[in-house]
Length: 581
Image 1: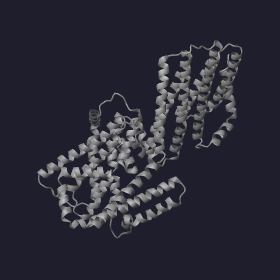
Image 2 (image 1 turned 90 degrees about the horizontal axis):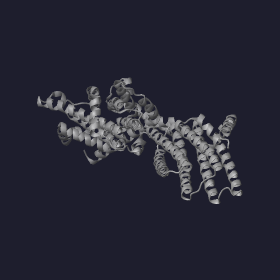
Image 3 (image 1 turned 45 degrees about the vertical axis):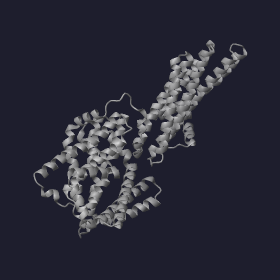
Image 4 (image 1 turned 90 degrees about the vertical axis):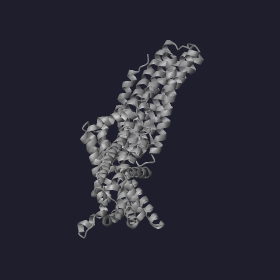
């Protein structure tokens, strides 16, 4: 192989990898959400799990992506480790679909049907259609379909280029000696591991073997060990992807790895036995790209069939490797590896933002308790929760900014926008809650005490703000528009209460029934309570806007106008409920 042939091979490999990446990403954007929904419905039936895992992987063209998706479900509690074993084993079978696509290049013949099935006949047409859709279409779905077609065309062209570059190697003595060396099972496995680790793709690695098959000197004896090693290398990639996940998700990655290692060990034993009994002719028989696709599928299917009955033992082995940890890392859900599968990444952000909402509710309620009856531990809890909520906003916000760089479906885009709007409001609510707790501390430190009238009045607005906070958290976590519509009327009642309480307090000041210092604290408390209810109103707005598939202000205003009667009804209900004494 001269330097120019090497350049041709490298160029073909680059096109192959690029085409595979484009194809996988485009399919993932369009099918990822539906695949996620399908995987969420996995039952305890292991055969159904295997079939679904294989089907999902065949569609999205990546066993690694499927396994990472499953790890995400395990991380969030949607899927148990036990129910994930079937889809993980099935993903190994589904990844062979790429090899079958590449095997189309082996089709030859003079009949019209055979000529049409050969990629050289239809790939240029697919490339043209894909380019037209990508350049001229305005719809995201059509553009993604164009990217799929172009990705497939580039992938097949890269495969053809690699095959052309390798064709002269059939006469190369060095290449033949290399293949003889790789027929040593252990060396072949190690070479396969290195290949998959370097290319970060088992499908691409198998594609190179298929391209080399054009030389006519590739045999079962030297291709099978390579395939074994490639699958182990794919397991290493999944292990790295799961490094930041929780314990069960890491165990899922190890199950994927263990499955491939056990498979390689079993077939290595078979190969060693066959070689010790004499070199069977079948091991040295030359094979084609189509034969490699068959070999790859048979290898993975047999291994899955053998290991599936022992799934409990696989789980036990994974638990021996990943020991229980004292505490789960909450923000492992935001591992950047999930960005490669946007629907899973979005669901991780939803889970964490819901946790943030619940923490905010606790912070507000605890801060109000600090004013009612000061408690040092409660004050410390508010301060710690406020710091924790700040971290939530930073982590979720930064992750969502990165996620926004990826192409999302319409619903995922709305969800991301809703979360971005809300996490800032939750963080500001916790700030005002901390202010409330500090006002409670000031009352204690300065030995100040409100009059019985002031305490009774504050108790009314405390209850109102607690309820509006509960409504906001429920509306956000459940994405419930009906609950969200109740928030603005109650927020208006809180505004009314603030104005009335302030006026009454001024009257007490004028009568000398309250000190100026106490008046400042009273005013600060009212301001923080009113600001908390304002942020609850903002959260309600984001929920209602999402329900209308819009994030424009006028859409929310139109919603309010259409529900004037409901607004008036709720406002009257809350006004009566929170009558001042």
